[in-house]
Length: 404
Figure 1 (cartoon, one colour):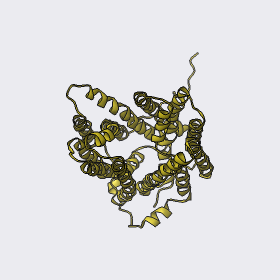
Figure 2 (cartoon, rainbow, N blue to C red; figure 1 turned 180 degrees about the vertical axis):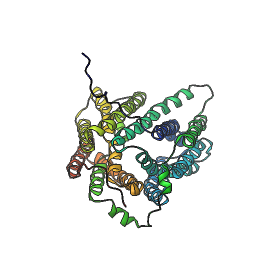
Figure 3 (cartoon, helix red, strand yellow; figure 1 turned 60 degrees about the horizontal axis):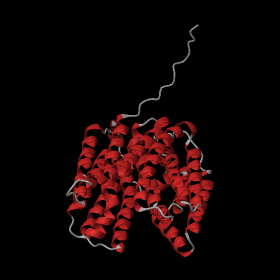
Figure 4 (cartoon, rainbow, N blue to C red; figure 1 turned 135 degrees about the vertical axis):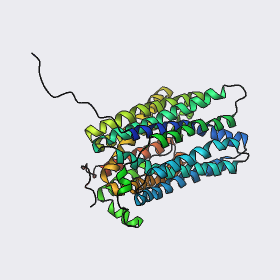
């Protein structure tokens, strides 16, 4: 006898703009990662830049990007437009990045790297806000999961493409950098043709001009508590370069570390895609808590494990932390704020993480040098535990009521 019941659940397709922005991130990271792993070699070997110069270039570039993420987020809320800043940011990076191949002295590279990060600062908060604008509330995790997965896929493909190009006779580092313009062009085509922002953003009356302090106050206590937890966690989340250094000290060759880094991005790609979708069903907080537990366990293991095989397994497991946190944090930020302040919210979110990143690496480096790697990794795990306690004070809430 035929049993008649409700049709099986079918997940709704994500909006076309979300898929298009995923492709944009894929091609952008493909272009970026064709250059970034080779940049220190190019600066030191070809242009004669020293360690201080390399550190100054990266520090200035990343600090600028963090500041501009706050500015661009507030600006996109005032203008009620996302796409112009998204296109401008990706366009600036797409032009600046390949021109590194034509640089004759390292200060020119510093200028171009600065322009690249300015582009990142301009686009990031408006892009994340746009994803939330076009996505139903109960699919936010899936949307950010797809976006982050495509981003990590580009990070896997970029170094492989660069390595393949360098096998071509007569191909130089400069040639690889210039060819990074090809995926940058594809980025602009996808942005112009396939990315659409909701018409309601342009039709709604612009919000009253407000100060940074008043915007911060309007975010609400739950949002501020979430950022406090993220701030504490980020202070213990140093650059991944220290994990790679630990692998090197354990005896892994440079080639093995490069392959392991690619494998790490494969894990991140799969984990972010699945983690975002899972958070739509189970809630944001428990996924982030689980991710921070994984992070703390990885850092404890890096402090205690000495065998190369053990460190390799732990490093690959480290990719799971990203899947449980990256898309979920963005989905939670979008859910805690009203649409009219969404760009500002993502600006505060990215700015908080960016501002804390520099002292995090300095703290870790100081402990690493003065006491040893075990103490440094244990400190990172302890700060993750403190952040979990703070995160438990942030309740899961339904979609916020729009401002009238």
